[in-house]
Image: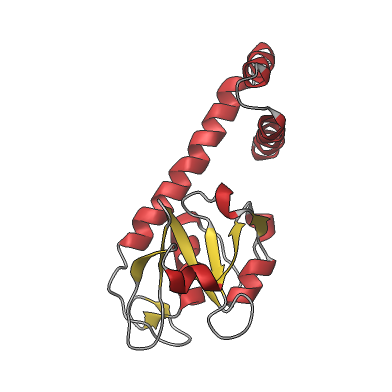
Length: 181
């Protein structure tokens, strides 16, 4: 079923991307999918993706206050930024992302900032090199991350001047095929 739902979902998303607001293309696609008995499956897949993203964000929020630790990857020892992201994806979705922030950026799909959805990854240049910091987008312009030594996991506003000036890009974790070890 997994191999069937992903192409159907890709078809739906591709069609939706080309549909202009106010046109009947979306309704036309829904009709076509319904005629072929696919609409329910696509809706189920869409809901499953939304549920996983919601679970990921809720799980990440339960780690608020865990201290930063360079190289850390657990609540017991503390997290660094990429260790936090990796642990959240592994514990919540069962997906193992690479260990370092720049490797996580390379292993995921680039998206525009305007396309951000909860569960997407946001990257920043905080050490004079691209993709040196990563967090998880939680919605409403905010992200959760493990920022630096002496601090702890927290939620911050991406629209603060510090983060805006250092924003490197957004990425979406698409499937197990996008992740590596």
